[in-house]
Length: 272
Image 1: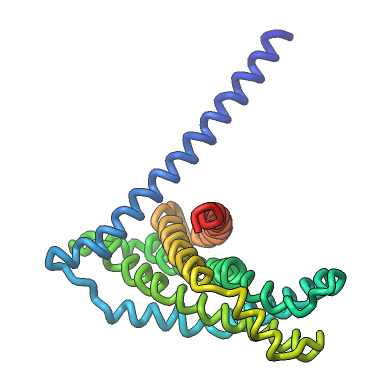
Image 2 (image 1 turned 90 degrees about the horizontal axis):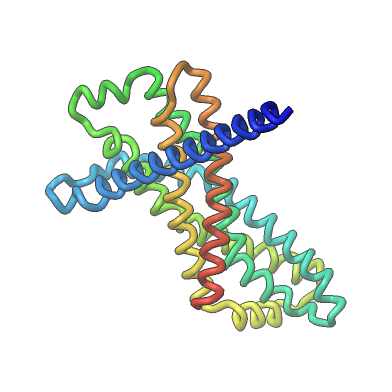
């Protein structure tokens, strides 16, 4: 009985150690890939190896321009929902005219950057993993290395720069669409005077709200690109692993985006 008990404890202990070992192994691999990407993107151009911008423009169209419709739709609906939900509570306090202020601040500081990043994690992060993962299992990445081409600079850097530029731009447009959705509902359905709605919104929103949202979006862009790229580069096996790692990349990037949002929200709360 005692032997069985301690045997059970020992097996569970080794499983626990294996989980932590795998976790830190993945974190270490993600760190080294991120470091290599930052070096290829920002340091190598200073040493006479400039980035090629044509692939960057192509990726900017793929990740930015082609994502505007879904980002606009999601942000507009979030603004509408937030206006309805906040009006339900504020009307009980006799402060219905402050719906615009609540919607504007919530969209700028939190929901605009976060919802845009989550949408891009599902759309762009999955595409990155699927594209580069297919190249990995078909030995195209090995072929790049054989031709003395750095896969990080050739594949990841254009995607990194594209999303780092386009995600803040999409965030600004998402903010505007969310505020527009709240404005339309507030002035038509809720019966708030448009001038009062706009004035209260402008009084509540300040420049730091926009700045904090853009800082978050830049961090989210790094997370989405690096998680998607890392999950593609570690694929081993056949094509079935591409789908599995793509699903994993989406889930992990969403979780990390939310964790990063919590960290930066807490930081900005105490600092700004």
